[in-house]
Length: 91
Image 1 (tube, helix red, strand yellow):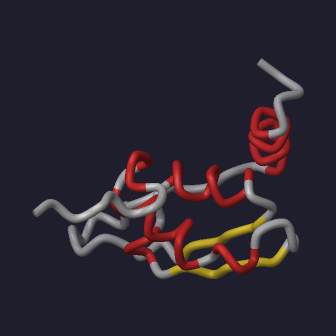
Image 2 (cartoon, helix red, strand yellow):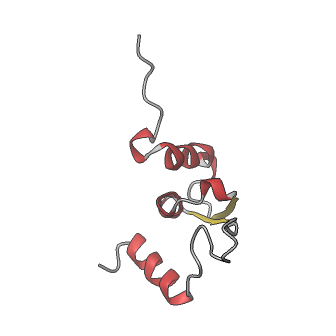
């Protein structure tokens, strides 16, 4: 017998897990701070679509080169553009 699919499983494992964990916060404009293991851009976008702001810690890599494993920096303009894209006000 096969298990039924978990809610939001079509969005991927990490994204689905983030959405299931935060379901009680939908449409509250709450802020969720996540560990770097959950730092997936698609999850951050999907959470924002549900009315949740999110942030994730991005750790420095162990390569010794001073590079970052995730995003180096995001300007306010890029964040504003992302917000407009999410809300469907820009293409």
